[in-house]
Length: 372
Image (cartoon, rainbow, N blue to C red; front, side, top):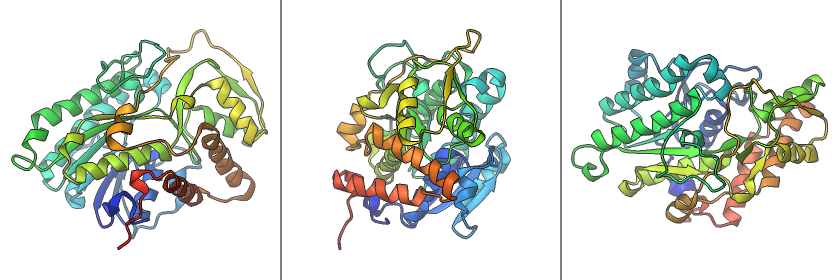
């Protein structure tokens, strides 16, 4: 495990914001298995159960700081104490429908929280690499059939999407103003990039207003799932897919490769962009214990109907590719929840090992094991 990504993460001081969330807890688990020294900064988990608590990290392996990234003083103190070499920024208000109810809190967390972190890292002096995780929803969505590329305009119809578009703009601002790649090694030592991923699924997500968690809760309670928009198309991928992209991007930045200090898309192959209706069929194939009803709500807040990413730049320049096909993605997701509810077993480690093994079979660059 420690040889992955050319062994770059072994012994590295990593600051991970949002480590108690779904994606953050998976990333913390992977980083720790590679020998990284991880400090997590986040609010407490918001659901019960939650993946972070189920993993039962020991305080000796993960240094957890419970704080709000909008609290600049507390965040600066945490960053100073951690002296991170690389930062993965995942802390955010991540729900579209919640952003309609709490727009100010959404913008405050996703924009000013990011500004606070960038400033804390600029002042601490130890940070060599910074990866800001935003969203595929940062783009100005024109509902077209081809994928958005990294140089397409930022936008955002709803507060969440707009906040992520703003996060991309301020990332570019800090890169141009304070961490310009052409001044790397002369005026500063930090390379700053951003990463945009599609809809991630996998075991351990119990978030509100998300399709897979809604299905899982319905199975647990023996109720039906209400489906608002069965024709909505999204780029579905297992959570480990974009995490492998973030880690590969972080590796390049830590190696001082300034040409990688920019924005990147990490999404599934074309087959992964499927409708909500197709997702339901995939899940029922692997866990046929739920029923659903179609309940379109004409008064529901606007959400994008069609959204896809063009990930050719990550494929061609980073050498990043998805590992699992769409059916395997839903199989691993359903199996994780089935094992949890029916056997009380957590398959996170098993999923990670099988993901890495498949990546090695496909000879992906980050999965190579260096033999002395």
